[in-house]
Image (cartoon, rainbow, N blue to C red; front, side, top):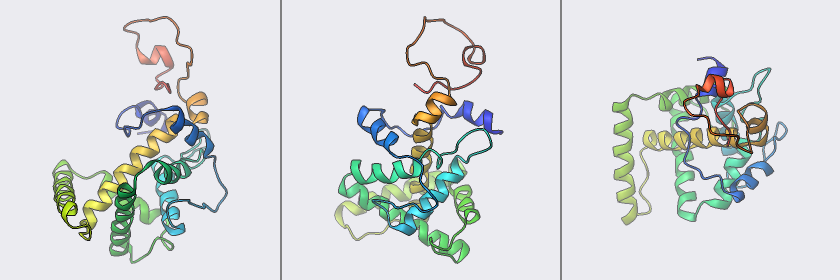
Length: 214
C-alpha cells in the first residue's frame, strides 16, 4: 500500500481517544524535538525505543511529515505521565519490560543498542499476527489481569505484554498524527466550519479521497 493510500485509510483502526480540549492542548504542546528525546515518564532508553517505533509506524517522506516530525512520541510519553493512573502506569512499564525481553530474545540487544530494523521486526511480528495468535495473546492477557488482582507480583507473559503495548502505541500514534495541527490542517481534509449537507457524495469527489481531520 502506498503512502497516499495509507493516509486515506487511517480513519480505520485508530485508538479510542476522545479529542477533548485538554488532550488536544497536550498534543499541540508536544512539538518535534532534536536528535535527543528527553521523556518525562519513560526512562531514556524506553523513550528511545518509543521514538523508534513511532517513527516506523508513520514515517516521513519528502512530502508529508511523519509522526516523530509532529511530536507524537512526546505526546504519548506526556499523556502517559499526566492522564494515566498509577495502576495504568505500572502496566505500561510492565509492557516495556516484556518488550525488552522479546527484543533481547530476538536480537540479543537492549533498548539502548537496538536499531530501527530490530524494532521493525518486533512490530511486524506482533502487529501482523494471525487472528488465532491474537486470540492466544488476548487469552494470556485476560489470565494475567485476573491473577494480578490477587497478586501484584504476577508477571505478564512477554509475548502477550509486547503485543498489548505495541497495539497501544500503534493506536496512539495514528490518533496523535491525525489530530496534530500540521497534519489535520495541511494533509488531511480540514473543514472547521462545515458546509451544507450533501448526501451520497463519493469520498474521492468530496475530499480528494482524504479522511476528514475533524
